Image (cartoon, rainbow, N blue to C red; front, side, top):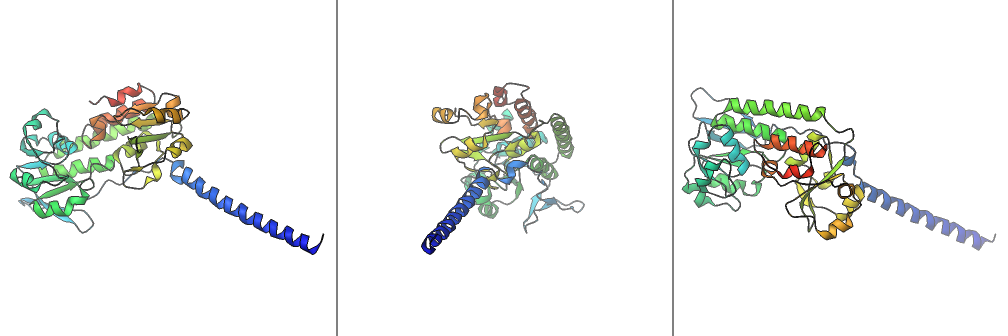
Length: 334
């Protein structure tokens, strides 16, 4: 072979190696996006202790709550005029036996029925005048759901108690205990924790042999999915299933690729109130969830609200995912 021929061969081989290397890098990157490491395991349990109720002096009329990030809130003990900004919080206050002290609730609060006659107030957008007109001595909010308005709320409202009802079941149980420290009902809060332990133990004993993938859809078009950091994501973890949108980050929801649904092939799809669009039904027809009729409604209010009825919703979710009851049962709140 001539020198020119050998040079050409060497150059060609070098270019081929560069090309193959680029292809390998691209495929490796794509593989990581299609099948991230978090899909290989069920998520670990979160730590629900988001705050610490500081010991109160004997006879003190206020309670101090330390959130560990430099925020310490002082709230009245046994407040007599409470404003709730979320349906789940309203249900928690009723569960603790303080419903008669509610003077204002959010526009979406409807349980128990007695709260329907109360003043309606909002914090998103923040209606300071409407809230202050109710003259509450304690306003209960969710630190995460209302994070954009926290500074404004705290600057206008005399006493605010921040809970974390939307992150995980452990956070919700702890929120109940923090709320009970302020409004009373410690025995009820302890009973709620004990009931949680019993429900979870029964579910773990009936866990599936394989951690199947689940897609939780918030909306269809554009496609939004619930990811890590959402209460429903944590309920799936407890049931022994994997959220296929585990790589969305910690903002609880976000846009999700239709192609990733095809690639990750969820065994179940939990859907919003709107029915599955025909376009997606056709495109995803070979996805196991649709092929096997595993499309379940996940918009029942006890499942979506971070309140005491969540334990019944969790048991129902487990029963549906395990095939003990039809998928439609998930949409029936109790």
